[in-house]
Amino acid sequence: MAFVTEENLTALAEKRWATAAPPRLAELTTALVRHLHAFAREVRLTEDEWLAAVEWLAATGRISDDKRQEFILASDVLGLSTLVVQLNNRFEPEATPATVLGPFHIDGSPTVPYAHDMSDGVEGTPLYVTGRVLGLDGVPLPDVVLDVWQADADGAYESQLPEVDEARLRAKYRTREDGSYCVRTIAPRGYAIPMDGPVGDLIARTAISHFRPAHIHFLIEHPGHERLVTHLFQQGSEYLDSDVVFGTKDRLVVEFTERPAGRTPDGGESRTPYLQAEFDFVLQPSAGAGSRP
Ligand code: BEZ
Ligand code: FE
Image (cartoon, rainbow, N blue to C red):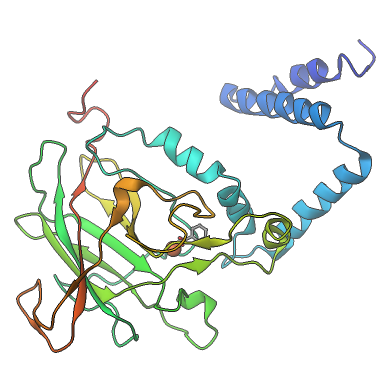
């Protein structure tokens, strides 16, 4: 048995954690020990700093519940969530890139018909998001489910508004025979991430902007294809180049084009001017379902 020294401690701890099962857990825990020790050695971590970090982690746990996930927010602002998305969604260059899911997705949104107005009376500038869902070969995909959710014209999700007790600004659409979809909604606004917790406390000590640019979330699922979790961002929106959760990708930035009153993309009539965002989503075939090597 080797007694502990500053020099041998990391190797001893790694050896202990290498006994974890299954082997993948051993791989994760030994790498974690290695990197944590390297971090402490590099910055010469003091005992007070170590205690402050433990207290910050404990506060992050205390503020989290089934509606608020402060650890995920921490992961988001540290860039870890986007890195994990990136590592696990290595799509072909033609496929629509994935971004973070974020904390505001809810399972079980209502399935609605083509061009249904999911704003359902929520105030804002009318917006139509239109386009097609295609395979990598450019073939339109019918009957694809697009689960859509967004903040309102003030940048708020319903869970952030005590006076709103119903789901809103979210719905599931399906593509038509020709792969086309039409989401009728209002233009969302960019917003601040929650700043009243330990993540906000940390961000407030930096020069980091705590805002996200205006965006709409999409979760697109279709048999034989990888699940696509992505956003569309409004071109010209503030914070596109400083998104606090590192979620913005240039290929997902879309013009919200001003259209005059009159004919709408679904063949209806609008008495007021409206915005239209046009975007074709391209799905990555599932591994083993025809993707290129
Ligand atoms: C969102 O876009 O809904 C979001 C993503 C990450 C952190 C906070 C919000
Ligand atoms: Fe969002």
